[in-house]
Length: 485
Image (cartoon, rainbow, N blue to C red):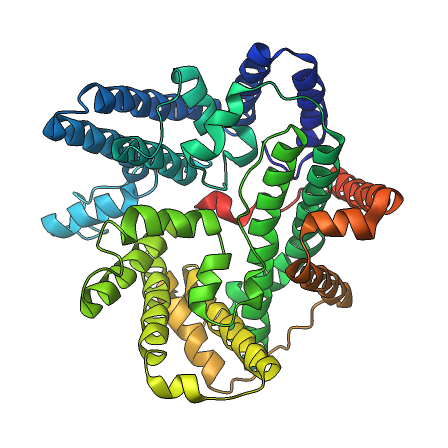
């Protein structure tokens, strides 16, 4: 089920009403079944993949604890649980690359009669998110930093909890499961704060990300038709689009959970106010960045090794980030560029003379924000690229070819159509960043309590929800960008 659909606008009020009426034992059972229904709306058969992950992970957890004093068996069942979850990604996300590799080993070309055709498999929604969440549970219990859930039902609810099931935030067991053990009662405070964050998410998605999408799509569908300036406008707009889209989803998820009395961690902390790429990745998709830190970077040795090893660990972590986002050389290159940027910053800032540069604080911050936004946007020439056919000679271009083509065209003057987005997009972007400047100085709860008050909050919520409802009634909203990952 999509958050941005009429279906969800009917589904969620019913879920909340019944949830608060039921006793604690039945509250969680209700929540589990509505979460399964939420996922089944996408594709019923893919429920069995979710069940598979729940069963394999929970049995592995039990065996890890059962053989806690036998390190080799304990480690074996940890690896078994991790591999069992990664198999889902291998089969449903990376199967095309596996078949390509087999064809390469066998020397088969696409035109050969013996060429092995990869299966046409629809990527299950949220598979990258709930598998990472299952792996974090396995590793945390193995390390002894989290307890095993009371039973498989609570673990199943942990993996299937509908607000964050499809696109995060990626949670840890200690952040969520304990919240299932207590009865949730309606709280006016939770309702106000949750309603505000939910509506903020709908504003980002419906009034900013979706209107930007057609302009970005036009340029990336035929980049050779557009002026150099248009390429930069498109890639800057895509940065805003993906932020509005993905942080909008996280806001709706966090707000939805908050209304029901559950606390989910912040997933975006105004990343476009970052002054370095290192700071950016501490503010962008925080739950995934922290997952990479805790389960990839630190196990590799983190920064407690030689400088060379530290740089290598950081680079490997960002490559894995790129591969996680999608299949294709362009995602690998995107992750590599971010890895290089982080290494470059770490190296260049290690020189003593950088500490002696004495720019006014405001100038330094503005330059840093401009630099971070520019380089983050630049990498989207590769991330957003899709395979195309060049019209002049019908030459097929891979996604990475398109990324290189757009990059070269962006840095060399090229004539073409000038992209002119609608004025109301810039008005909404201005409103969003005006609010985020306030959030940078004060918390969202401070903003709700001291700025919106009661009447303004309900006016804001009514305006956003009614606008979204009307839009969803007359058209199909754009899918959330991260559903494809």
